[in-house]
Amino acid sequence: MYLSIGGDFSVREKSIIGIFDLDNTSTSKRTRAFLKRCEQDGEIVPCDELPKSFVVTSSYGFNRVYLSPLSARTLENRLK
Image (cartoon, rainbow, N blue to C red; front, side, top):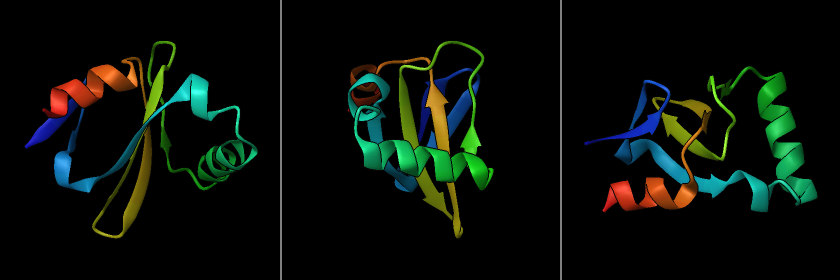
């Protein structure tokens, strides 16, 4: 199954490591460092709108961080 994360993007449910709220988690120094490293490594997939959450995925040995205009709660509800 696939999860639509907004912005014409979908990810495989099996590849999802975590769904995180951008406002709450970006206050952590470790999360900011993680996102900065992912951006430097080219692992971030941006969205066209203001991002509210991010989805961390890993499949076939590739890690990706998708920025999503949808809230983490909305994405979690779509998984159910």
